[in-house]
Every structure is written in structure tokens, then in C-alpha cells.
Image (cartoon, rainbow, N blue to C red; front, top):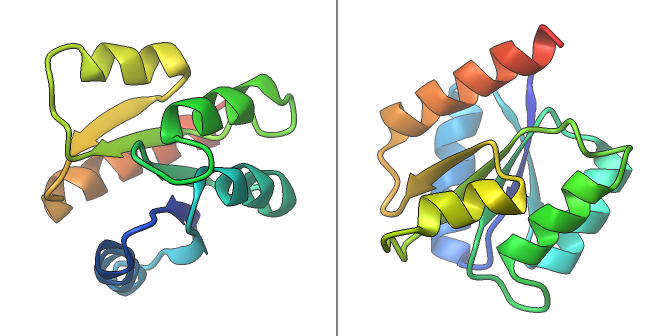
Length: 125
């Protein structure tokens, strides 16, 4: 069962996405801010990280940079999740080290396809 770390500060978004992904066969780990996300990534070594970009303590951009800078967690695929779909956000997410980018509100089928593609790629490395 693939383990996904969901780094999301909004309780409603976190609960909804956790339940929906768990029903699709994923084990969900949760962090509520960027600093906790970095710590959980290192401690739990999930198969994939869903990273909200607007987080307290440490934003998703910096949390992703730290995860990608650590050799122990650098190969974990990260999908940026943001409600701020502005021009250049995708490029900024990729520059921070994210492997993909998705917008809120979440379209579950699209997100699940991105997760599957990254998990398949990570398994082949």
C-alpha cells in the first residue's frame, strides 16, 4: 500500500482528501505545517508527498526545498497543491523541487492520475 504524506493545514481539506485517497488504497500520513512535513518526511520516508504551498510555520516552497536538499528524502516525489493558481506558480513549484503541481479545489481523478504516474516512476528508479 503506497504511503502518502499529506501536508495540509486546513482541517476540512485534510480530512476530505485523506478519506478519499485512503478509499483508493493509500496509507495517509498527515502533517499540519511545513516544519512538521519536513520532519515527517525524514522520519517516515513516504512514497509520495502532497504539499500545500500556503502553510504556517514553514511554507510549502521552503519545506519542499528542505526535503529535496536532504539526501534521505530527495527522491520522494512531491506534488504541490495550491489554491493560488497564478501565472508562474507551476514554474515556481518545479523550481522549488516539486515533481508536479495541482490546483485546488482538488479534482480527485486528475490528482490520482498524477500520483499513480509519479509512484510508477519512483518505483522504476
